[in-house]
Length: 422
Image 1 (tube, rainbow, N blue to C red):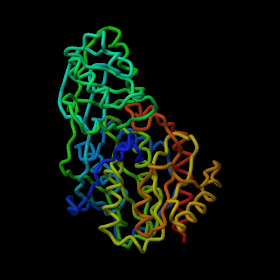
Image 2 (image 1 turned 90 degrees about the vertical axis):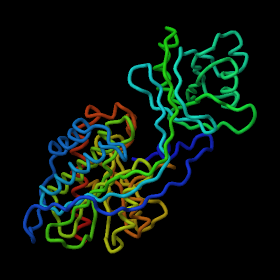
Image 3 (image 1 turned 180 degrees about the horizontal axis):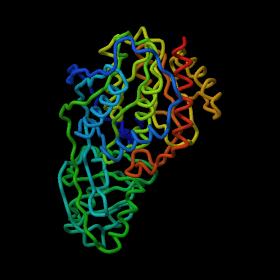
Image 4 (image 1 turned 60 degrees about the vertical axis):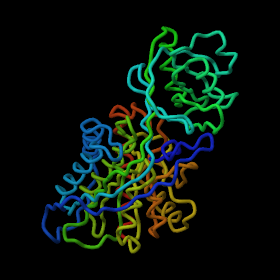
């Protein structure tokens, strides 16, 4: 699921430059199994089968960040599974150009993902870690910071003042801990003197991992690294073996964020899509897996742009099915047809035994249904609710509740059968 922190981390009024995506067409030969005219099949989906797909994607392959070998391996796995179910499955590559922040803080167990501050340089630094409160000059006055990396709390004074005070005291880098949950990207306004040392931000939760190092006088390494080279990402598209046109779509995004196995977000949705493809081979229903969702829905945007989707009657998207915590059927608030589809899907899903109301995502949060809705296809996302482990290394196989997966699969199958019937 795409959230604000992934779409450019919009805290402190800084937003990434607009990104673009350009298709390069299919890069893999379509594979097929089964004969033309295979009859429609509908059977109950099995959560145990879906869980094995989650295991393969999140544990076997692991991190599936857009543009990485892990994402490509996931696309190949999905293609092969869909082919084995009797579909003509193809990997479609597309180009993505979007700023990527690969900044890290290393020294307290696993590397901590950081975001480099706008206005400070990229670079590498290492040194002992010293905590200096909010980083006011008086907080630093009595400390020996020559060659040190300064850990400061966000708030009270501008980022520029924190960085300049540390720099003037001899520090080689600054790590700013957020004062509220989540990631953020700060901006250091231009001016003189110039900030010449790396400055990165980390979450308050991640900063807690650094406390023991501070107490022990330990050292860390900071890397501020931003890249913007175009890279290739991948969709997977599966059509019925007889080549019939798609009158409806079921989709899920296959990528994860950096450093996260993405078991719930979104190996669970991808596994649900695969299990529906196996158990619900319905006339005119095509199955899709999207790349680069976490960077801004780029895979679904590329698919909608490059295919004649407007004649489809619906798109059912699956994003996070593995942990019941307020399940919903979500539609784009500005699209009346999609809102009506969400109400219909809610009624059908709720008849399977769990209340799944229609709703909308919070601001700056979305999923691939939005691309289809904006392309003229009524579209909804079915999800099992919020997950505190989303976008963290803890979103692993242990984060999946198989009973939740079973509830959401049964609901998804009921909705799909209802929509496919017309």
